[in-house]
Length: 499
Image 1: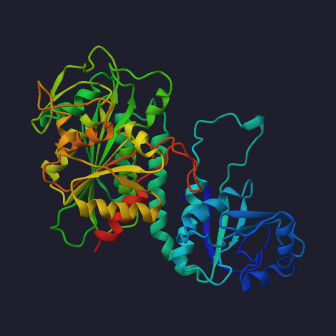
Image 2: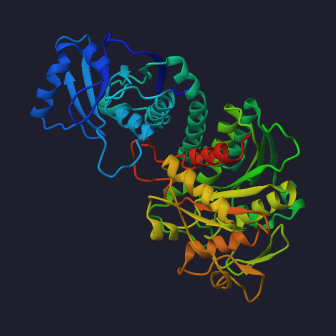
Image 3: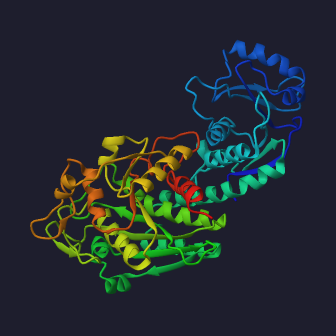
């Protein structure tokens, strides 16, 4: 359950105090039933709208305090008139927008009915998901209140009033599971690195056992026996021990099928190692484990909604620090696959972690497919900004399904190329491959590096550097760590792999 907002579904009814939210179109009119609840106030809406030039456009609002004739301290009128672009109505975004307009309100009733008729139970559940995602905040370490004043941190009590509350509650169950996964991922990304490091991250992932997920944690000795020298090489400059966490959700009815696999880069702090990063902005490198956070959040979402699929989540957890034992440019590491890697730049470390994690999944788990998520390159932001993640794949159907899930959830991706010419750029003169190829095509050559460690397994790589941390705020996320990818991958699984 969210600690920031408590959402209930109830029947449509007149306001009973607090904040009452209604929806209007371009004619400033609410649905006939809601207009009846508003009584004389409904007739005054048009005059009030004209006064402030409120036109009822989608994601606009009109705030009326102490409305005459209505038992509410506040009437929040939200515009939902369709735009000219013809885009489908986005109910999670609408829910986030409404929550963003509530301010200090603690008791809210939302008359969830379209101006022209009813919205269905699925729409109500999506709207409630948006409310919850927007409500999230990370303030666990704030001890001084703003301006020295006490702030009411109690959750907002929001009732979404609909035509069929039971159907809305049923539809919301799966969305609540996904919200739990997103919130878990956001919390992990937002934690400071002195609190969340490989060992403590692994302990939090092990907490999924209470949800029915099987969790195995490999320590450095166990990884060394497997030959995971690329992953271990990244962490050897840190006093924190590295970990590999394997999470299994067994929800499929048929027990003989291959699982889906999801792999996350978990660099809990990235100083750049010996190739140290500039000091400006280095604090953001606590979020270099956002891919791993997404995988953990996804596994929780699947478990909580009892997804009918077998899925495995694997996260490689390290710190990249520059002490006297750290790897150096020109070192050569032998990976679990047997391939040797020339280290050109110790700040190209995430691909080393993923090289061993991906090969482990391919070799030991033998999945139906695998998708990795990583804040892998700044180059992907040069190419795509912070609006989309970069998608690389060796399988067209897998890429198409991920793209469609991204469009459906708003966690959009853009497919980037792979090819022999890019692959040649990471050939090494002294080893099988080098871990960096310079500035040109930086995101692509990083993906080409990963491709060498997946063999013939259908695979996709999501470079989430621009969207998973410090991404632009939007209607459903105001958090530094966005939890990006949990909703996309949950949708991807639900639409194509559950039976």
